Image (cartoon, rainbow, N blue to C red; front, side, top):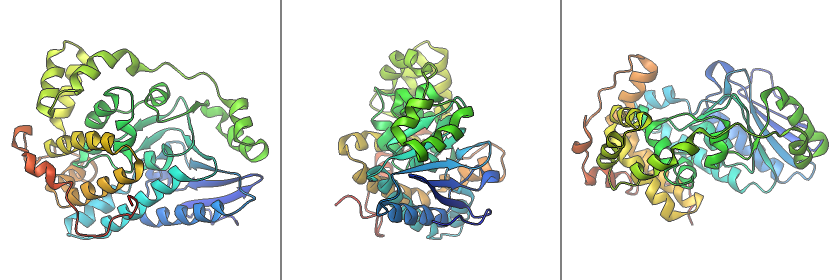
Length: 350
C-alpha cells in the first residue's frame, strides 16, 4: 500500500512483514473522526486478505499520545442541533472495535502517552497491547455526561474485582503497571525503544520483537487498593457506593466519592448498570450493541451537551447537571438507556 500524504489524518504503509497505521492529528492528540474510522476499517479489511501482511501496528503521531478519544466537539455540535451524525459515527466506530478484536493476525497497539475513550477502543481490543512509562489510560466519559463505550464497559467489566467500576465512575487515568493489572495491556516497552520495537515487528515478527524489547513493568498502584475498592463498589446502588467510600476511612476513597459526586448523576448510574449488564453478556459484540443503545439515548440527554460545554467549549469546569443529584435519577430513567434506539445498530450481536 502506498504512503499517504503527510497531512492525511491516518497514515498507512507497509514494510517487511508488517502494515502500519499512524493516527495523524497530533495537535488534537489524534482525536478520532468518522472519516478516520472508515479509513482504518478499510485498511484492516484489505490487510486481512493480504498474505504479505503478517501483523498490523497502530501508533499515534506527535509526543502527546496515541489517541485522546472521539472528536467530542463534533458530537457537541451534533447534539446541540438535534443531528444524527453521531449515531452514524458510533455505529461504524463500534463495528471497527469488533473488527479489531476478531482480527485474525497480530494487531499491535502502541499505547504511549494519552490513550482515552475511543483511543482505548482502537488499542485495548488488539491482540498485542504495548504500554510505556508515559501511558495514561482512561475512560473519562462520566465527566462529560456520557457513558464508557467502544467496548469500554466490556473491558472494565472484566477487570479484577471492582477495579473497572472504580475507573469507569471516576474517570481516573492509570499508568503502565495498572493497565497490565486491569487486562488493558500485555507488555511493557520503554518509550525510547518503541521505534526499535515497531521496526522489529516488520523484520523479525511480533514474538521476536516482544522478546527483544519488552521489560518488566512498573508496579501496579491499584493492587494495594483492591480491598476498599472491591468492598465499596460492590454496593447495590451508586448512592450506597458513595456512602461506603466516605465511610471506609481511606483518603483515596473519600477523593473517589467526591469525584463521583461531581460527575453527571445520570451518567454514573447508567455506567454502573452498563458494566453489570456487560458482565452478564460476557461477549464483546452484544456489549457493543448495548453501548450503542446507551450512546443513542445519551445523545438526547442535556448532560452530554452540558458536560462537553463545561470541559471543552467554555472550559469553566462547572457543569450544571440535570438532574443535579443521584437521588433524582429514577430507575425508569436508567432503563430508558437500554431500550432499542429506533435506528439500526452496528449489527454485531447476531
